Image 1 (spheres, rainbow, N blue to C red):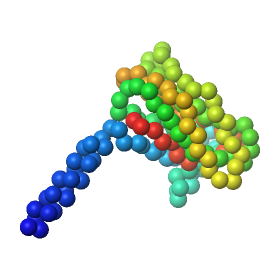
Image 2 (cartoon, rainbow, N blue to C red; image 1 turned 90 degrees about the vertical axis):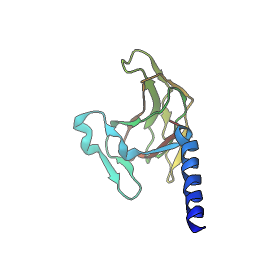
Image 3 (tube, rainbow, N blue to C red; image 1 turned 180 degrees about the vertical axis):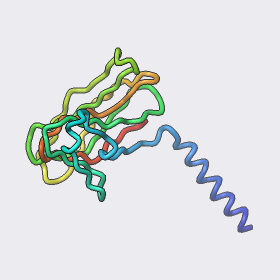
Image 4 (cartoon, rainbow, N blue to C red; image 1 turned 120 degrees about the vertical axis):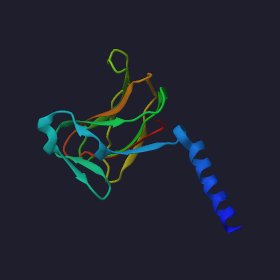
Length: 149
């Protein structure tokens, strides 16, 4: 009897994971990203408690986002800044960078608390790439990027 109950619970858990599959939302820490220019490596510091990054320079920062399927993708990111001027955008492209879908840059607000923003959808082609492209300044904090892969 106990064994049957355990098997039933395990089967239900596996079924729910299978049904969630590719449609589940995904969160990517800003710490997964990287400075675009090699000489800007020292501009970014990671908070290992929150996985947020803080910029100490005017620099470029990209966060790759893995997709499971092609199609329309919305990106929500959580950020804050101590001075105005930093901004991010969502970018998608085919692997040859000949078909690019990009949103307008969104300014990162000057705020003591993290604030989220959702971009308009970009179209990720089959075998395409999807990433967040940010221009930071001193005091920019990027926390996480959320989307449905």
